Image: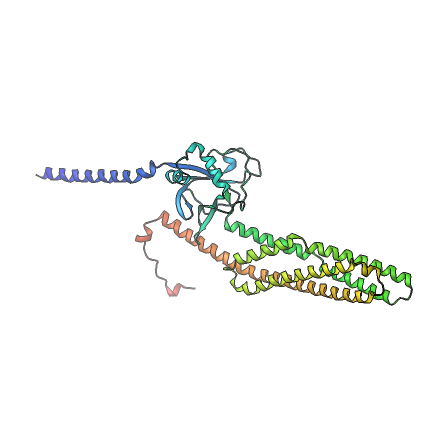
Amino acid sequence: MKHDRNFKIGLFILSGIFLLAALLVALGAGSIFKDSFIVETYFDESVQGLDVGGAVKFRGVQVGTVKSISFVWAQYDTPSDQGRYVLVTMALDGALIEKFFGAKFNKEDSQEALDRAAANGLRARLTTQGLTGVAFLQLDFSEKGQFEQLPISWEPENPYIPSAPSTMSRLEAAFDSIGTGLKEIESVDFKGIGHSLNEILAKINEGLGETEGPSFGVLIKQNLTELHGTLARTHALLAKPEIDSMIEDASRTFASTRRITSSAEKDVSPLLHNLNLASVNMLKTSETLRKLLASDKVRASVDKLPEALTDIRNAARDIRRGTQELELTLRNMNDITSSEAGVIRGILEKTREVMENLNAITTDVKENPSRLFLGAPPSKLNPEKLP
């Protein structure tokens, strides 16, 4: 009787083990035998936060996982300037890919289908998830021509999807562009231009006091020629498209960082508006003065010279005023940028500390998962031992 009972208990245990093993096999068979579609992409930036097994999403819906992360030079023979690319291989859901591209899609013609999708704006982008530092790959369509494909000189082993720069890298590039534009504006000698105009007007006034006719005419002609050349250079400088594009880049960048530097929003918008108005006013004034000096009436009629000189003085006064406004606006913009740089740096420092703490916590839980539920509470502090 006792032998039969032990036999039944053993049989029950073996049956439970067998059922548990069968359940595990059934649950894992779907992922093991699931049809996957392997593609690869390249990044010319850091992929910090992206790990093997990370999610690959299409408009927020997971369609695959990251299979491997390596360097291009470890897989292909590449030039030195292209060897710094990071190679990321993805395993996409084959059934979803076939439904996405249609019934005529097959793996042999997959690169041709992906090329058509890339021409329509399909790109792979590195996206950060919250403040934890964990990253995933986001597949989505962007506007045609918005992101150029990275130059490659090899034939990819797997179907290739072009990549797009991450939001953080584009933000850093925008800040660099603004800094370069501000340095170019600061290099323009507006004070020298105003000083040159003052010297020309002083020479004209001295010429008006002379009584000799021939020397007066020669002096007036020389001064008008110098003033015309100065105004032409000023007009050419203000008419460059880089000035307009720089103002547009500054406006877009400050708009994208509005959530970080919200305290400076009220000051930045008037400064950009004043900068645009000052540039437009200087451009209009220099154009009006250039047309006035190029007129045949000014050159041919000496009798109307006092009236023309009055107009020149007024125009020069407007140019000096516009120059002062532009310098004041640039100075205020530099002050605001310098003052907010500490705030932005502090926010990034705090964010980095939070991510490091979270990574330390997750690493500790991953190495010792039982400590999360069975760990002993921290020891009580002795007030006498406190410093």
